[in-house]
Amino acid sequence: MTVVEGTRTATRVAWPGRGLKATLSMGLALTLAALLAGAFEPLPDGSAQVGAKVDPGVARVAELAPDSTLRVIVRETDPPTDSAERLVTDLGGTVTHELPIIGAFSAHVPASALPELAGSDSVGLVWGDGRIRMSGSNTSAYDSAAPNTAWRQSIRLTQVEGNYNGAGVTVAILDTGVTPTADLDGRLLARVDLTPDHDGWDRYGHGAHMAGIISGNGAMSGGQWRGVAPGANLVSVKVAGTDGSTDVSVVIAGMQWVLASRYQYNIRVLNLAFGTDSGQSYSIDPLNYAVEQVWFSGILVVASAGNRGPDANTINKPGDDPFVVTVGAADLRGTSERWDDVVAPFSSWGLTPDGFAKPDLVAPGITIVSTRAPGSTVDSLHPAARLGDYYFKGTGTSQAAAIVSGVAALMFQANPWLTPDLAKAALLHSAYKLPNYRTGGGAGLVDASGAVQAARNWGGIAPANVGLVPSTGMGSLEASRGSFHVYTDANGDGMWEPVVGEIDVLGQPWTSISWSALSWSTSVWCSLTSVSPGWESISWSATSWSGTTWSATSWSATSWSATSWSATTWSADVWS
Image (tube, rainbow, N blue to C red; front, top):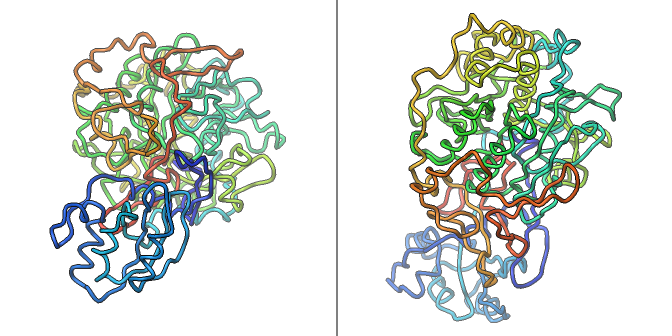
């Protein structure tokens, strides 16, 4: 679920120890992540000192093609000097771009000169300057497409919105924050922030879009661009900042807050669009365990499938969990008729690592108009997707999941006694079946009228998830991350390190045995301080993040899956 994805983009990151903020192209952002990512193999000459500085892919190219010219990123030692650049020139190479934000420069160098370059005391690291190629799931292609005006009719929302609007039901949005707007009309009950920002604002632009789809009332458009349940309340749990990056441990902490606060705010639905490409079995995975704990508490969890289609078996975690409702995206082809609908080409689908077919159903996911977060990252990078001053067109399985979350709010208003298992069964039972959905469409297209009717007359529907075995949560936190990692200067030494292994993003040890035994009935992970009515800041585990700098190995809403960087493959569908 991304608001918008694709195209060459930029991110703003802070370079620790230098006090710089600069705009970094997507290519350089991924290079930064690569520069800081772990140990390298030795060069062919076996020099451990030199080889430890060099990307193994570059070293291999230099070995196989010694007469070639290499495109590299050279990170200088700290403090930087001009000697590394002079050395490149002396070796017959060319400096192409200064990259002060990462203390480096790009260059073309003879392959034969690589050992001497890497052996210099003025050189810290040498990494391949790879070429980006777009994945097949580029949803930014829809930036300039017409806004979707047919989806309300297509899901038969118009047949129930006169009687139900989600009033009294609260949907929790675990995302990038929410920017207050008149379209939310005071129904944003709480804004919680687990990031260094400590303010709850959506500086990335994704969470605000989700909020408007779920319960925006369209006040700034005369009601035209309203959401599914314009009477529903919201709580926002912010787990990612300006660049959209976050860690599994933060997402889990956010779910802990949602569970602990469910009675205070009457939270009945959790909208979750974060996902990783992890292949760890749900039966032991900590992230899956967390979403199941929320589910078992009486909250329906709606997760986006991911934007890694059209390839099969690409469902994001925790959408791979058999308990939750996993939502793919439908392409309505610009009409309100349902017979011509198809599964959107970018929508993830297929079998999970445990053999469960996902998604469970689909919902409209192309050029959905919702609230804009002016000046946010996504808003700035995709001006063609803006619709006036207050709205934005978003495409992805995130948008589809938000629509289903809004439908779920209508269902819980119609029948407050629904359990998550009954609500899931009602959604799947009432979905519009179409042969076009047999591959990648689950039970079919969500049907708001049918779902509300099924919720009211649930007696004839068997609950979902009977016989499923819950997760133990005893698996690896690192495995749950898949290929997605964030960087942080947790120890304050001015150097970024990836958050890897069995630690959380604060650097605290993660022990699956003790963690899975925690009581999820209280907010054991969160120290809450009320700032003003409806607004809260969180010092997670009573630890301040204010001095911690983040960056992401993946630009989380750009669908750069299968982008090759030398020997490293990146997948960047964190926000689908």
